[in-house]
Image (cartoon, helix red, strand yellow):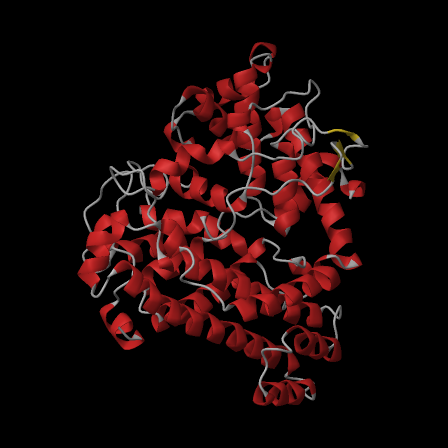
Length: 476
């Protein structure tokens, strides 16, 4: 089997025959099931709000640095190029790419870390020290994306959430790790983020709250998940996008100059670069006005070429190992194939991965750990923690939609603001701060989750403005 056969036959593209939704719908007339997923993501409010969420540098710090929306569009471009070259489903790739960060917080990963620490009892925002049970703990942006699209973002009266297919939801969840590593601030059982107190969870932050969404990502009637090679493509396209735009944004923010960037690329990729590549790097280094776009182009091409070439070779080996020769074979064998074996098909070469690891470490040290990034991180973490605490202390400060969300969680209902009267809403506002409810642990747990959802959905500017409204102009 050669790559031409794989591409033309789309042999290994996700078997759309197994695509299902929580609520079955008639197929659209002019679109596939995966196109419908893509369009529902594209037209969602959560997708549009990505335009106001930080990627690495605060959007107001420079007109041309990336935000979560532009990042998602770049991931889409890289992933679709890869998918087309590997004969995979372009429409599923688009849906996963555009939706992969839809659950992200304001202020980038510091927002995610802060909410996760609150929802893991690591940061206490409660006067009574309410501790979340293990099955209620955690926040993670990729899993929050599945929650938003499965529950929170309702688009039609009779549908729950956006009712996406199992393949798209799986890809969104699995573009990033599904668990947290042990907390780096832990040493000999002592947490250095909490004034050197003993850590009650031994550094293992849970995300068990999201396990309820696993069924949405399975093949109907099976225990296996709706895995796909398209999901793996998006996961690595996300990495490629981050490498090139972190470099370009750092250059725009004057954290790295062109000489430093060229030198570090040569250092890390010394065993991989050809003479032609090295000469091209030297030529790019001589540019002034066009350095940023040219270095981005170079890096994307460098990474994507290795990814496509290596994955093509891996597909040939995978086809031999699984005895798959045509599209119908993959569809018929899909349920019995090992997801673990499939996970290694879409990949960089071993030599390239070593080069990338070197480059990634340099970017972490010089960009993400720079004083400008770290000062911003400290400030934004403080704002999110204080905002959460303000809402928790007096939940009547919450917006009407979030007050309603608290009682929907508590009572298992699905009321919307348009479906209840102002009087009924007033009753909820009265009840939400009542001593009887505040003494109910189940209520407190649902209140914290609703606040977490609310804060996670905010844009950077909305957090800043809301903080000012609650704490005053001089508080920041």
